[in-house]
Image (cartoon, rainbow, N blue to C red):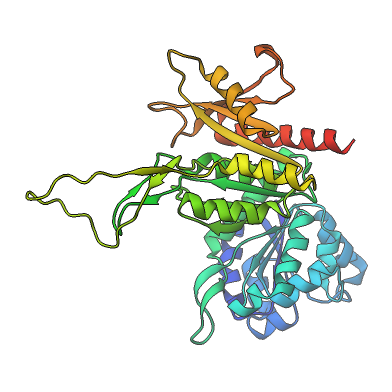
Length: 414
């Protein structure tokens, strides 16, 4: 594979040497394109020795080869590490004032940026806007690491470790090879994931078995489809995908507040989190003790709000049509009074959402598993044969769900 490794002018430039070594040892042909300022940190001789290829930062070097056009055209992958705030701004603005930014404009394959800068630069609204712009165009912008920065500073802004950048870069190539249609470009998708925890005392809580795997798989699929993705994450056993706007919550009431706030600028809201139906009526400030001379405690539960139903009601009452699509998830077991599909249809009618993804749950089913089987219910469905059934890995199922959502959005815009 032909790789262009762009190196920005930051102290973390020295780590790019380890990344270059990972690429070359894996058999890839790497051309390093440093910015002029980056050569204040690592010289061109280092890059030439490690890559075995000539190094240039100027469009006027090797003019006969038309490098400013050729490099981007020929590259199967472009990785920029470190990507400084200035370099992200120039890339987002479409500038072409050196060989690296020219190469980025000519890129036809995957582009991966690995940011590194001070925390204040990373969190600045200008940088956030530039990152959002690059992601909306299909570039992969990794989340920076959190840790010690230059001097005594600590916080988000640290260059991800070379091994992490290497893995993300190869994953971007694999995603590109799959040719996933970017059917949600320009759309904002909010996804809730994981299981809420309702505190009893400072130590204990009421929870559920949700791992967050389905929600994170949906986030991955939505990112691959070109969406801006906001992930409202309760407790999860898996990390949040890189590239999402992450909102951490713990309780159902916290998730409720976050979901209502996020709905205001979302085209799609997917309620995949396992939200507790009940919470303790009161939370004590000290640990509940088990004492032989006292009676066992009695815990009174109160009903949590129906967040999905509230979102639908708020949208329909406001008359804004935002979010355009609200998708619910239902976990059902079935019993003597009805099967899973019957309960799913009743829930869809009661909630009023646009789509309902129905899971059959139980021991060794769905929660924490990598495989799943769902049915996608719509108010327009009539009869069991009209219900879309999807089975496979949670990643495969999520891709089908996102494709269905994109189709529903397209139908509403016609």
